[in-house]
Image (tube, rainbow over all chains, first blue to last red; front, side, top):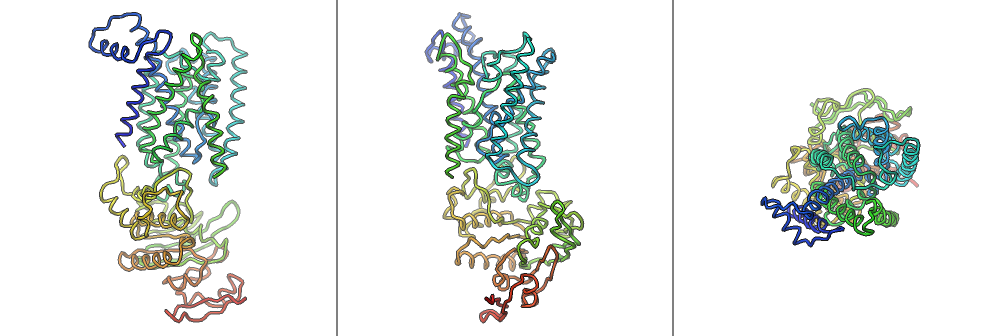
Length: 331
Length: 258
């Protein structure tokens, strides 16, 4: 179990090193390693190359990793709680609710308070989560898979409309562009925000990991979990709050990046099975790698122009989603 | 002290009464069959006994303590249930499913230790499910899945085992094996068993006591010979039956008159 995660961590580091070298100024992986070694041994030369590596690309790669890990882990938890492999923060509309919260926050001037915008994004996410669960749950078991996804589609188009509406009536300098809020974009990575997001990720992940075995039981059905000794209601609320927090931090800093939370957990389940004690760290590490690769592609595919990273994830995610859905229908 | 005691329990879903004024007491180490027509409240009553559902009024006492006051993990160490079916949406190995039965014994961050694995080995051997321990639960046949779920319940090391028509998917050999395992556990470890079934002959042959439910009320409780009379069955199930004695063990034998 530890070996698998060590391998995935190694994968992330390797991909990170390759991604560091790619861009307008190309540096071979060996050169990147040498530059890192120099920086650590204090022989940094403050060359233009090192400036690009450590001040521009490194924060962005770390940021991509943190956002990718947060979204993937949230996806794992939503899928377990709804017992539906197609659930994720984007499809269920939770990212959308979070983005709308963030925009409202910026428009109302919450940006002048530290964490003001992420807090409103969190409120938006939380409201959506509980809406989804009320629609999906009811008092007797869970709603059919397809109606849940349909509800997600409706909620999503409502939020998209609300976001477009908000963006067209305000003309705030602080607001990102429309594409940022609808497609996601990692180019705004700043070290301070990245550190905050990392803190949220690590604390959130710690809490989720402590519940990993309970998640295994919850997947068997709430009644089964209950009779095996899980305090289902308290566990569910705790998990929902933590995942909402992780999603909203990611969304308020990186916009809406879709499908990561579906693809990554599914691939990890396929390879490693469903034990959440392995699945959660594996999804976090692989999700980080995945978004680093996607963002690097977004940076270099049309260089010098940059694509929003959400374009890349949606381009591979939507077909993957349809593939999963077909597989499910066929049993 | 009876291990299970129901006192005047009433329960309704929305406005529809499901259980009305049901009272009974069961002694430890007994095997009890819960019988009754569809919709008589058997499954609801079973859920009350493992505290996943609570009565609107009245009490269910397990070892003398109201189920409402039992901590979740503690009751999971005392009462286990084998459900009819378990959803298999995400792939787990059969052994992982059985290991989940050890959850009530583990502290929150601990991993299962040697003792837990030994217990899992043992219960899987007893339910003849070791041969597919490392196969995916969702790829097993209905009968194999049933045996895994039985193993999971036994891994909880319960004092009370509840079965919701748990023999329906088992073939004859595994049915016989399972029933003799239940008798053995009740004799040697004082396990109390409550099982729901529609098979009156299975109930007659294997249970010490029958609890007959009818329209959400307790119709009667007693030995198979007391409960399985042509008159009771006519009144509750609305069918005509003939009753004679099973030549092998003397238990009442019910034959449908068609």
